[in-house]
Length: 114
Image 1 (spheres, rainbow, N blue to C red):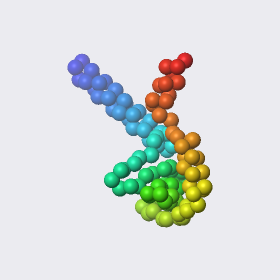
Image 2 (tube, rainbow, N blue to C red):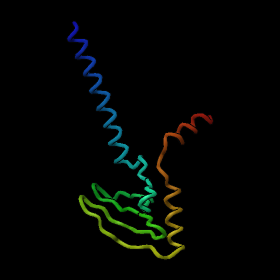
Image 3 (cartoon, rainbow, N blue to C red):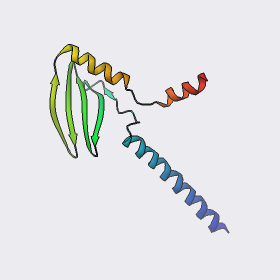
Image 4 (spheres, helix red, strand yellow):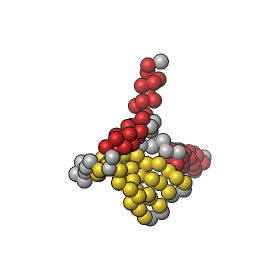
């Protein structure tokens, strides 16, 4: 009897951990996780990432005042272009601000307000 209860406990633990990893994987694949991060020491900010397919992405970087468009494939990064026009830079930055990914805080605030 003791072995049976230990086996059930281990099975439930493995199931819960598997579910957590599955949900994290799905959130990453569907673009629901927040990839915006800033390292003040480096001066490089990831403004946004758009997936083009499996293991292929376009990344918009802000390096100082410059906006760079970079293509990312399996194990390589390819610089695509630098956006120099100030009007285009502002348009791109505002476009990524509007499409901010879901956050737990935002979802919780919606439930609290209703």
